[in-house]
Length: 137
Image 1: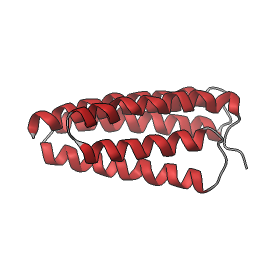
Image 2: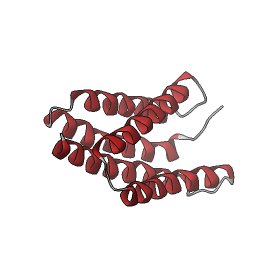
Image 3: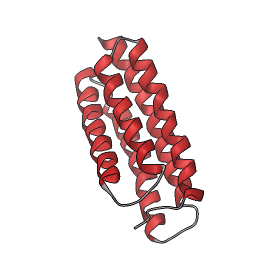
Image 4: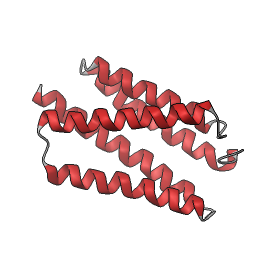
């Protein structure tokens, strides 16, 4: 069963490519494990959205993204990032994801834009988190 047609998912492939930015940044900052985790998540996301059907590729995308989420939360705790920032991050990332999911279930034609926003907001927050982590280290 299709999750999305190519007309919609092509935008999600492109927005998944934005995860390459924090992947490369982490690598240049010698945060190799972070770079590998983000890179794996990037590959899983692109691989799923290039042909968005319910399959093992979707499972891999969900598992990788959740592992990165837990990794990021642990990183926030480790660096002592302000809980105000963590709250804002949770609201913006969680909110855009929730809106995309709600709109998808409603079969709203613009659900994809909320998910693109989710990818781009996540990219920005990951870059900020890596910057703080490198300064803390």
